[in-house]
Length: 215
Image 1: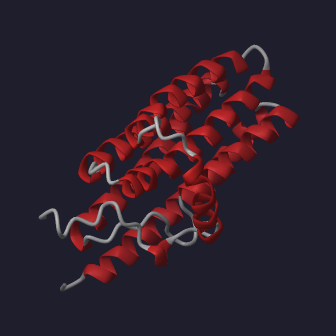
Image 2 (image 1 turned 60 degrees about the horizontal axis):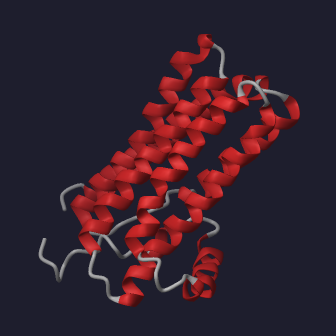
């Protein structure tokens, strides 16, 4: 791809999640409030800090479940910096389109891994396989996203109305329910997540295969 045809910095508006329109308005309102000395790459790199925070506070949650509130705060902070970094770079003409695409999504993957590691601390050892299957499912969704982008040059960030924002909020919701009802809630709920995850993967692969057939 040439610089003129690279569309990794342009999200496909038609595939935004349920909360996409509200996200766009939120970003437009607050992007101008980011201090000028904070660059887009600073916001991108901050995911390393949020990832470390998720692992640390998830570990502490083993001894005091209320630390999960701080884990949820890490998710919200990562959401904010992830939402703003690309827009800050575009508005200020920082010229980090391909670097931003690579590093932003690599660090998104690192952040996702930190969540899995955190839940690994909390869940009983008998749930190791189920947690590994959850890792496979959600990492597969990321793989499908990038393969689809490679084939179409259209970057779709949500499928079936569910994207990164909706997923983060679901994790915050799960954390909240674990604080209220205990870690056993996630242990009981995980098989349901796996079932819907496998169905979602099947639907995504089928829809993508159908749209790309003979193109």
